[in-house]
Image 1 (tube, rainbow, N blue to C red):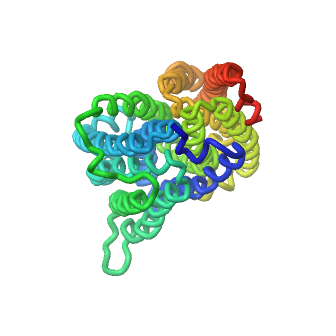
Image 2 (cartoon, one colour; image 1 turned 135 degrees about the vertical axis):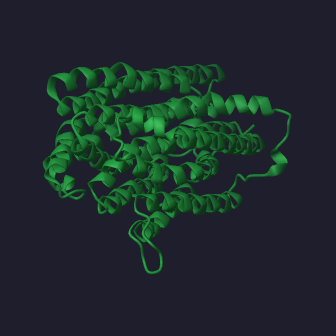
Image 3 (spheres, rainbow, N blue to C red; image 1 turned 120 degrees about the horizontal axis):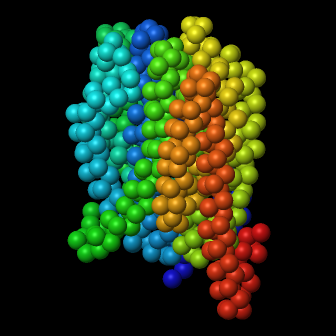
Length: 465
């Protein structure tokens, strides 16, 4: 059956560019939400800024579960399209939506019930507990909207609808930009809700983005059709989605979990260290937007070509993407290091907070290039149903490098040692992830050459070169 994937022919570099540039705007808009939250919440006082700094790794981890949903649906949809199985692609998308909705409800209940114990484990002080609870309670109740929105986005990603996918993120961010100042500080007849206002703004934005995602999907090549829901093949569909989406969700959430552990280590040095780390973390998230966008776009390209048995093109996409990640990451690190205190001063007037944020940037920013290699390589592995390999790298990076290094280096060098642990984790994890992804894709390319030789046809690997 002929491939129905539009990314299985034409220039790889062209597809990488045209799938990534809309994603840059979408991811930048998404990352800006954390910066906007930090800015307006920070105006409420240092305790509020410290509270949102404790919250940030948790909501990032939760959002990463949603990213896992996108990755799982993207993977099965793109490979089905690459094989020319359009109806199966729609069926898998619907199954993913149902799974995401059920998971969202379960996670929301757990978060609501155990949020207190979670933040006590992170060494959040009792004085911050009411502020954290004021944010996390409405956020937990709105979390199912996140999962629903992400599942619809996964169907758009898998078919290569980059502009539509990015539009969903832009709607989400724009709603936050408008609602944050209104609900945090108050506007006109609306009272200010303080830190809780940031959560209310996020929940409303999730709902608006979900509606937008549904409308855009129903006018795309793939649609959410209830007629595709059938008990026949349901078990196989769940296994296919969970086999990729489960490890991908854990893989994407393990990094913010590691950052939450680092936040706990830094809490022993005081609230200023935590606030500075939180502010710098938001700046980091914005600085690596092109890398995050690239990691999101490579999945559809690799997945469709892998499904169409054009593994050489998939390998070429990885090489181009990782090369860009290393060059861009190194360049942006140099800028952040040179202007570290200037950037840090955007988030706080407190000298100790600025010192901590600048200290982090000077050390950790040099790992951004290989962090990009990590997430791009993992994106490629997820796309070809090798999510367990990506999970192995991500878990090892955090549990075998980041946490032990933070404990050892923190004891020896203070908070600078904790920042150095993140640098070490990125350098080692990124190198290993690329090595594994390249070997897997090279093995596929060798199979492609063998198929072409047996058929007496020119190799697609050579054509992709």
